[in-house]
Length: 426
Image (cartoon, rainbow, N blue to C red; front, top):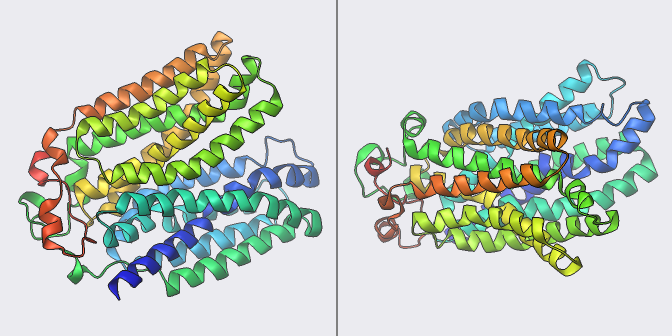
């Protein structure tokens, strides 16, 4: 019974992620951009401001949402996030100018992303899965939204052609409300606290389910993980945003550049499973540092690739390493700090990461404008990823002590044991 419950919980989280902000809103945005802009008589720089509003709102709300998620049944924030996202999408169908309704829609979408996004689902997955946590996180957090994005683009294109962009946004809002709402109510739940193994180590975790947020925020480990994630996320996402322009300056045609984006997307699906499996085998700081070297290697390969086979291979490698950015931070946070305040801890870490992701493309663009070449900014991105790996290598070797103690207390091996005693992390 417990095994079926945890599988259904993971399935419910996957459905919710497939109907979350990244898949429904961002996945369909390129299709809506031209139609909305033409209908409203806007330039192509106006409607994208809704993305900025939603992203800033999400970054601000993430720490608050994390605190809320840690203190109530996870289904309540998920329901609130689902309602917020659905109402935000509906409001988009009513906009007439970039005014209050426009901003309100972006704010609601951002709040929906914070309350109903990865923070809540990381808590669900981590409460049920221990030994295969990395793989399940990969399926829920990465593969599910990626598959949904691949399907939403052609579906929305057809809806816009048949019914117009306003009705299409209303239909998306209805789908989020009914399908994601039903998944939250019927499937998603965390493992009961009484069924979770108690920690066998001393320090702030003893006799509890993990660290408090304050204890984590005062530790060097938290800031090492967060700064490293910011560096590699800003570098890799920034490079991806400039991929087509970067390759165009190297003489690659627009058709081949589009093929590279497709190769990246397909490889991302594979990467979510491969990286998840690798996470479940992390047993040293050197292995963790090595995972942050993968994006650096991908960017270097992308910069020297010549000829179609090499370009596709490099782009696919780059797509696979995207899963490192998505999965490594939440995996390590739940391992190092436990479940007690994992959503609140990740809320601050994600807010920092989202800020870095927003700055990455901008900084690379500034460097290109100043130098007239992508050589310097892309080498800077490589250097940022290498620095992130170096930071991970500074973690205490004891921080990767395997979880035999926790597994011994949990014969089904579905618990949430940390890697170490907190005293070696502070």
